[in-house]
Length: 291
Image (cartoon, rainbow, N blue to C red; front, side):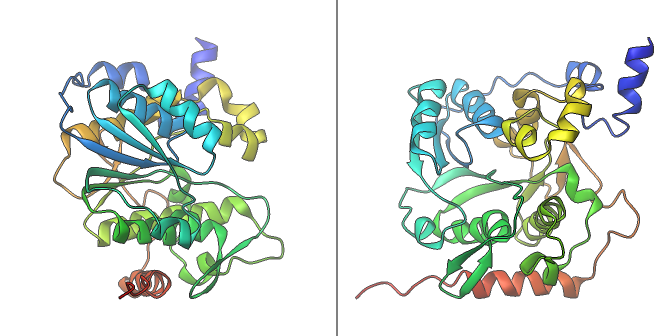
């Protein structure tokens, strides 16, 4: 009893695994036939992305897995099965994105992300772009223009709930010192804002035991690893959304609409939303087609 109580105290919002048995027992079984569905997912070679790809493929969907690492991509295809195809893609790289040529998909899932321990920039045609911003905002925004999709899902993070939309800092994160966790949260907040403005969906998978968490948040992992979700548990709502495609545009958690602002003082103005959308448009101008 004491151990269970301790776990619940450390998981007050249910982002970990403590409330999963009760929640998931009430969920409808996902048994839809997705054999006519084409799904593309970034960051699909490991963790939550791979778990989502495996589950969707098991339901019959054809899954296009995007990732930077070719070896990991080939391994992912083997793990997913014959319904999977791997296409190399670096979502932080402008040229890599515009060179993607695939047929329209039914569902596009923006899942790629990383938490950097140092400030880095990548070169785009419009100029240098913070790498975290490129990977989680400018890259997906550009990919939306390159890939035609009937339904789009952005995978955010519970960490964004503590962050306020701040276009200036997201584009040029403070350096003294650089805080990769704060920049990650800023950009994850931006994803939710941009998704809603585009009429697209966003969600967060909870606290999940992934390689990225172990590597980028070692103290958090050591303290909380016994309450972390499995990648499959974190991927459940992604699969549910892709399979059922709820029409209401919202921010989702565990198959329900969730509040974007449970933490005080994290709200923002429409003007701030307009700023980030204007910057994304400036950064993602497609090159003119050759005559």
